[in-house]
Length: 242
Image 1 (cartoon, rainbow, N blue to C red):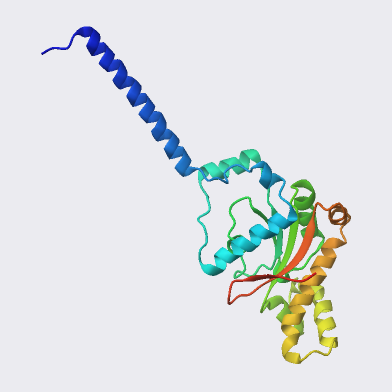
Image 2 (image 1 turned 180 degrees about the vertical axis):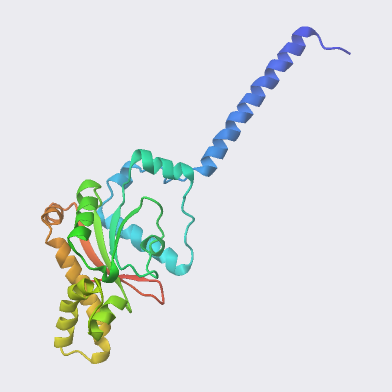
């Protein structure tokens, strides 16, 4: 009835080995389930082209519009990886500060994917331009998107005129040329508002492209600058024709 000592020891060793292997498999599965494929930037993401970047944004926006957004990893492991490995944002988004226009959600991207510069009216000043230059030159982002949106309050305030309190006037002064150009074009009055928004996007692009850093990167094919407009009702982002 009793097992021989040799056989008993052999059975014990087999049990220990089985428990060890099972534990390793369990740990591996747990780590895999907690780690996103995007935890570490791949060589492809570090060297992504402007065309690929634009495609990623368009695909992400399509998911957002359809309500099929993905669950992005915001775990401690993801945050630690970005802290240790650094950031490799594949696109720079210059957008309005409007609370209804959050780029990361609109394009369905996660931590470390986008370098965002947000200011009312998506205008460009020296400080904002320095941020754009940093992302393009130092971080290697291959795409800059200037994204305005319909019913922009900053453009509307500029059109209404009057004295702007505090530092709001500096925003109005940057948008004024767009409003004046569209108003003088003779288009129907009911179209001026949205056309002024489009013209303001173009003016911001022009301000960015005056940068010697941006100019050099664009000339070498390492960087592309495009305009875009967000529809508040549909959630869709339209890339504007160059």
